Length: 226
Image (cartoon, rainbow, N blue to C red; front, side):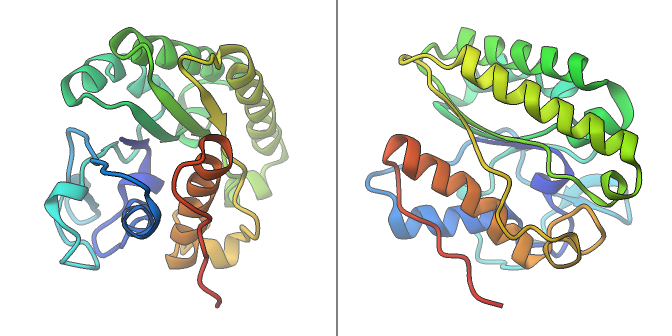
């Protein structure tokens, strides 16, 4: 199950990195899998709501569009609902990209890290053997322009790495994904935050490579040139 904010839900007309991950899993996964989640839609800027079904590839199947992601949502919003969502959809692996919206609008680094721990506890209460890959906050244009905000993002990433190390267990392993190599704001995003087509591939590659290296799942992701 994909869990995330606006970078994960995507906007009308996007492929999304979820789509890129679906393609990768189809090509390299060594066994059957299901993509699950309570939501299927994209964010529609015209309505400022998650009402769009206009994926760039209309053949992206409905069965693969499941997610728990929302425009303007963060760890603060997902921690209270992750347990019931995991239980209802029988998720056993979470790919999570959250935090930028928390730090930008709701909580500081320490508070956000506390919500990470609440999130993990809630997910495990529903599925004790759950696995998860957690993405650090990828600095955006605001972090580049505002040193204080950039420092808060860096502080949170340190706390996230510590939480992953503290909370990972053999029965319920956690992995910390790497910030996508080659993530340059002008190329990897279309507005300083949200992923361009190249950025979608880079995000998917970080999750895919973490799963492959940490758990032997799937294969190495090949980011297209250009």
